[in-house]
Image 1 (cartoon, rainbow, N blue to C red):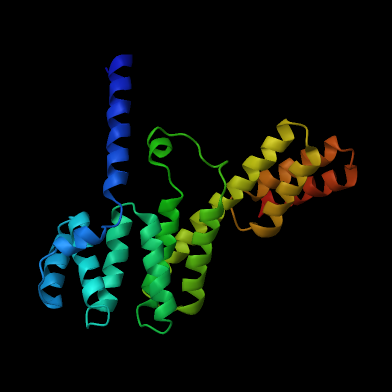
Image 2: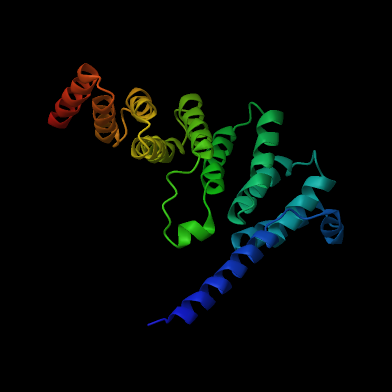
Length: 253
């Protein structure tokens, strides 16, 4: 069994490891690119691909960035950018990944692999919403702002609507279900926060928002319940009864 000192030491080591990982995940600067040997685009890409396949993401980013800088209009340019997105994603460098994706979409609006870029954009935004410390130690983060979650939802929705035949659509649909529940849960957390502080109108409005926008989520009944309780506290008996009736009907389905 790990004692308290051991736990504290482990937490420190873990914190340093995560910080180190973040430091190593930044994009290479010009000096890093210049140190890459002056070889053909094909030779550099073969090395970059091998590094990527072997999980050497920092090295692959250096090589891919060198190709992108030296041969911006070469035959490997589009594939290099897509590989850079994946390498940055795996390195937890979400901001650089998003910048690369947005540049690709802006410059290649009709590219055959645009569905992949929207899929990766959704994944990157999900990862950007995570916090390694809180996720590791099991802290509930549902009460944090859901901006990134909403953006990821838009990314996957765009993929499904614009590219219905894409191979990425089935996975995107599964992600959409998860994101829908996450957004509904966030709103419900806020509703409960208001209710506990006796801000009953604000609590009811948050519950109503879940009912109106996330009715397909698994949080519909809890949202109706918070509406019922809040309206009751406000003395709005008719609205409270309507929320209760809707909740009971929904249980029967």
